[in-house]
Image 1 (cartoon, rainbow, N blue to C red):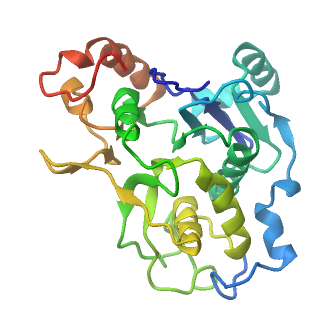
Image 2: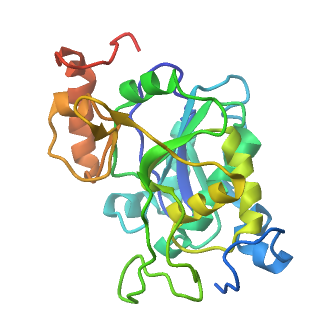
Length: 297
């Protein structure tokens, strides 16, 4: 549910258009001044899909400070078990934090999943202050994140690991392949890595609107960047000065409590590793002498 000045361990979602919340193609030109034809808008329109599980009242009676949305890849073995209909039903009854839609879940459809998350936020949780899209294999230092957000803008704000020099990969064997037909330009606009980024929730509705002006590409984080370009919004770097490093670490680091205390995210952990790391970190992070986190968060 919502992270209201308190810590929470991001939970894991499941497959088939499914993501969790915590209150928490053919292309002529890539973007244009006017809206796309209706048929081109259809693939990213929320009207195209239906909810299998929804949580429409989760933000109704309170105003979350931070909502976490965790998309999960169907290939993850633990989630495959959870993805069985009966297990999903039981999980949803127990925790009420699963959102699932009826599109085919795949890496190529991550852009659809991300846009459906943006729409869900704009419809059901628009009064939250911030939202975070974060992958299921990411460690999130919620203490540091909340402290960071307390002094961040509440409008037109998005931060994460900013990529300012991205270029399309034309090798058809690459996981991140983008053809000239899909995206004819030689460079991408600034965007934030999809591993984990945070934004003011006013952007959810605005990004959803911008998507009606931008042809879909399968790279969801780049696609969000293209929508931001339409809106005239540039992602913000989040860095520490001493040492000078990105707070959103998208490379894998071996767990070190006091190193992690200075960061907001660290990439690529197994679910069992995240559980053990969180158990240690949440109990002892304040013992780090250089930690800038207030334990009373």
